[in-house]
Length: 107
Image (cartoon, rainbow, N blue to C red):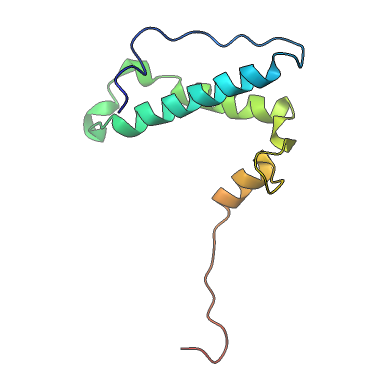
């Protein structure tokens, strides 16, 4: 884990209405989400005790607000890689179950 990720020096992301600042704002948002994911992945908890932690109240709403805002703002249709895949396509791909079917005649 990176020790300086959550050291109190977090700077708020400023979102401006102009495209002039969009690139740096999106970069800041992406970096913030990566830092949050890293923090969560490295923070091991005992689930038997975690349900008593009041700070977890509302985390579901906050996560849903983030995901919803991406869709409501239309960012889900933006291309996210060199293969011209959109955010929506990537999320759909991650959550679509994959079934490995054997070809007839193969055993």
